[in-house]
Length: 174
Image (cartoon, rainbow, N blue to C red):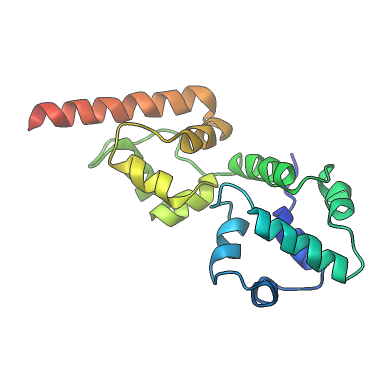
């Protein structure tokens, strides 16, 4: 396993820019690059990819060559997905979901401290974490993220079952 930096940040750095300078030059929203860098976006947008190619080109670099050298692929999307998968293995999930108040997913969020911190650790969008805290249906991107952690597929399925039991029991108590 490698711990390379996010490929978007890597290309920005190779161009001699900071995220702030890149954001200003290509007119991205204030938090857009932060969310991409943390893996809290599904993937870099086509507009971001085009901006990265342009920034590299302006500085005499080939984005594809830079990605190939560092990530073994010329494809930004593939490099991003592989980086995100590797980062999920580093997520400091609890060994097991401890009993307590709230749904099992809400207790995982409490373990991390916030929805944003949980989304960052799992490299998913905040909305997937927030939605699942109060629902028995796990969004597919969140399931995939859990399955890629050290919990694996077995752990992801166990969480799904625990969440369903919680909401079933909660319904009986009403």
